[in-house]
Length: 102
Image (cartoon, rainbow, N blue to C red; front, side, top):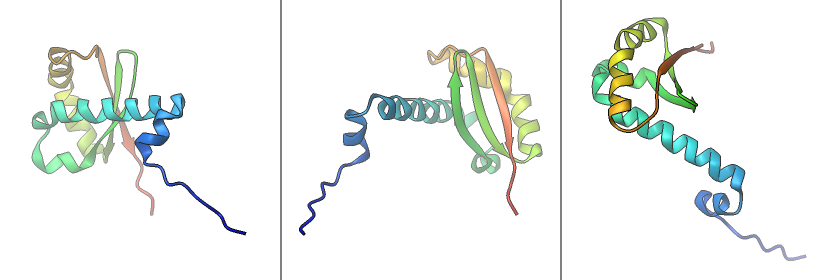
């Protein structure tokens, strides 16, 4: 029996699935938000920060470690102001510490 498979790119698959397209749009939005504020985050800390989902006017940022979370909390007012200036409706920056698995 001959099996023919068709290969799709992720973008092609998203075109056929509204749910997947919505998920990709949210991931792209989160990534763009992080790029917009990246220069506000100290260079040595940037690798510890990952974009998380936005829900209404709350944007979640994922960080590795409590020290990075503490510094990000200090920067939160500047980050929110930058995002507002760039057109995002953000009132709150939620910082979630990722637990490292051992």
